[in-house]
Amino acid sequence: MSEAGYSTAGHASTGRRKPRGAARSAAAVAVVLGLAAGGAYAAGLGPFADAAEAPDPAATTQARAFLADWAGGRLPGAGARTTSPERAAEVLRNFTAGLDIGRPALTPAAATVDEDGAVTVPFTARMPVEGLGTWTYASKLPLRKQQDGSWKVEWDLSLVHPKLSSTEKFRLEREEAAEARAVTDREGAPLSGAATPSLGPVVTRLAGGAGGGPRGAIQRVDRDTGEVSGTEADFGKKSAQPVEGPVRTTIDSGWQAAAEKALTAGADGKDAAVVALRVDNGQILALANSPSAGFNRAVSGTYAPGSTWKLVTTGALLLKGAVAPEDVVDCPKYLTVGKRFHNVETSEHRGATFLKDFAESCNTAFISLRGKLGEEEMGEVAGKYFGIGQRWHVGIPSFDGSVPAPRDETEKAASMIGQGRVLGNPLTMASVTATAVSGTFHQPTITSGTKDTTTTTALPGNVVGQLRTMMRATVTSGTARGLADLPGDIGAKTGTAEVSEEAPNNGWLVAHRGNVVIACVVEGGITGGSSALPVIHDMLAEVPGDPS
Image (cartoon, rainbow, N blue to C red):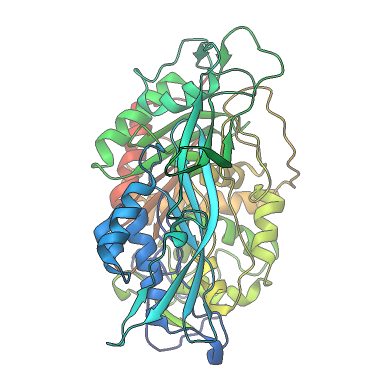
C-alpha cells in the first residue's frame, strides 16, 4: 500500500548491510503530494520555490482545496473559499449545464507571488464530455489575503475558463452519428451497454465507424443571441471511408462479466475502475468503471498510482545494481526530506531486507534509496522499459502515464513511492505489471490493427525474476496476503495514494496470475488492501483460468 504522509521533523538514514532478519509486517500511508483522478488534484504547489519567493502555504492550501471541492462536486464548499460564495457556487453549477460533463480533473501547477502580494495558481482542467472525449484547457486562480488574515480565491468568471464572461458562455453540439456498426467480443459475440454497462461508452464510440465514432464540439456562444463566436474543442472525425462489418474487440466476455460483478460488489458505491490485460500481447480483456456511465477512469483517469509504482522504482534500482532483495534497507518510522514521511500508523521494520520492504510497502525504506537514482532516471526507466509517457494507440482515448522529472528532493522522495507528479490509471498500471512479470512491454489495445509507435527495451531476465519473487512474497507474507487463499502462483502489489489533507486515500492493487494482469483503483478506498484487493480477489475467483 503506498503509504506515506508527512509531519514536522526528524531524520533517519538507511544503508545496505548484511541481513539481520525480518521485521513485523505493516503497510504504508501515501504522501500528500498526489494527484487524484477523475477530479482529484496535485499537492506540493508551494514547497518547490525558493524560500524568499515562496507563496504563503495557506494560500496554496486554499487553492488546492477550492479545486478539490470543485472537482468533487462540493460546489457550496468551493464557493465558500472565494470572495463571492453564492455567485461562485452558482456559476460553477451552471458552467457545465448542458455540456454532459462528468467529474473533472483539475491539476494545479506551481504557485507564484505577484508584485502586489497576491498569489496566482495556474491549473489545467480536464473536462470529460460523455461519449466524446476530454475538453482540456488552462486557467489560473488568483488569491488575496483578507483582512482577517485568511486567503480567498478572488472570484471572477474567467478563472472558471479564460473565455467565460458576462457576454459569452459555452454550448455542446453533437453531430448525428453514422449508422452504428456491431461491436463484438474477441470470440465474435455481440457486446452492448445493456449487458455490460461499463462498456456502453466504449461500444458507442467503436460503433460509430472506423477512425470516427461520435462527433461533436464545445462552442463559445453569445449569451443573448446564441450566435457562435468560436469553437473551444472538437471531438471525433469523419471517416475517409466507412468500413463494413462488425468491430471485433479484444474483450473477453467472461473476464468482463467478472469485472463488472466484482466492481459492483466491491466498490461500495465509490468511484472506481479496473482493467485486465493479457500479459503476452497487451490485449484488454476487461475494463469496468463505477459508475459505469460517463468518464472512463479506467483508461483516461489521472491518478497518483501510490505504491503500485514501486514496481517501476524497484525495476530502476535493480537495473543498476543499486540494491538487491537480500540487502538490509532499514524501515524507520519517519524520514524527513523537506517533509516528514511516515509509514502506516508510524510502524517500523528495523533490520528489514529490501524484499521485506517491498512486501510490506515501506515508504521510508524506498525514499532512503532516492540517492541511488539520477534526477531523471525514474522517468527514463519508465519510458524505456515500461512504455510510460510514450504515445499509445489503444483504440479508444487513453491517458498513457506521465513521470515528470522531480523539481526538488521532496518531490523526488515522493516519486519513489508513486506520488508527487507521477500519474497513471488502471490501464497504465496493468501494463506496468505485465511488463514487470514478463520483461517485455506490449502496447495495450482493445481493437486489432491499431498502430504502434512505441519503442522499448526488454527488462533483463534477472530483474524480471526478482520482481516476480517480490510480488509473490507480497501475497504470501505481505500486504496482499488477502489473495493467498486463491489457487495459482499469484503475485501482487498494494498501493494507497493520499489525495489531500481532507479527502480519504485512494486504494490500489495490481496482481498477476498466469497470462492475466489486473489493476484496480478505488477512490476514497482508504487502503489498497481493504478496497481494491477484494475486487481483484473476486475477479480471480470468478474466472479461474487464462483467456483463450
